Amino acid sequence: MLPPRLILGVLSLGGAIGGARLLRARREARAREVERVRQALLTDPEPDPFALAWVAGLPEPARRYLAHAIAPGVQLPTSAHLRMVGNIRSEPGGEWLEVEADEVLAPPRGLVWSARIRGRVLSLSGDDFYLAGRGESSFWLMDRVPVLRADGPDVARSAAGRVAAESVLLPSSLLPGHALEWRPGDDLDSARALFKVDTTPAELTLRLAGDGALRSATVQRWGPTRFGPGKGGRYTWQQFRVDAYAERTFSGITIPVRFSATWVPEEGPEFEFFRAEITRATFG
Image 1 (cartoon, helix red, strand yellow):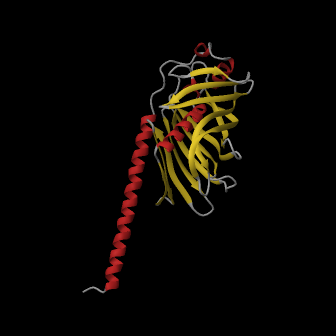
Image 2: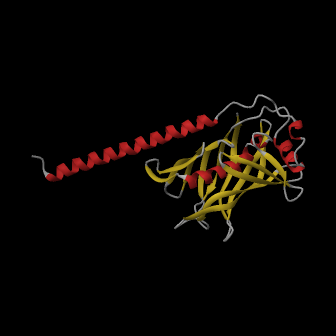
């Protein structure tokens, strides 16, 4: 008969191996799901090239923005593949961590954001996605241990607001039509785009420079009332702002390439949590 300690050791080893296999299977299943969403978002460009006549009847700021962002004759993309680097933090006053991310964006249908976040010692890797009314976030510690998984109605509605805000990274998605309407803003350098991301309403307010370059984009986004330790609380509509600091033209499409993202609650200070620079952009 084997000694009890040896039996316990074998059982513990077997449990550890089984647990590792289970975690690996979960990670592989997640990777397949993310790839399915990514492929669903990568569709063919619109067949007709862009012409300024398409925006002739819009409010002047909207016309100025779209004419600045899309060169005449460009075949209109329906998706963007973006590579970015930057910094992210999880709470006001928290440490800024380095992030590298690859994103497929196809407003108003959805997005996949795959990222690696590096701290001083440890790293996280994972994905956010939204498609067809479903939003999820899943991150792993050192590519091995699951540390975050979020889904459900609140996550999906918040992710839909993110898709709306990031429409400025694919300006062809903001052309009139497809249930999108432009209205004048509060002044001569602002305009509002009204549309839906599935069932989630979006009113995206753009503030522009004189030449049509984007300065900021603001939308009401569903989000938690607290961030950081004890985060969560109830969810509510809050202002969410993207500030643009530099732009670049890729194959006739001009987008912000250096920007930040900030929650602006009705009460309490603003929470800037993301700063990024796009290093590569391709459109399809």
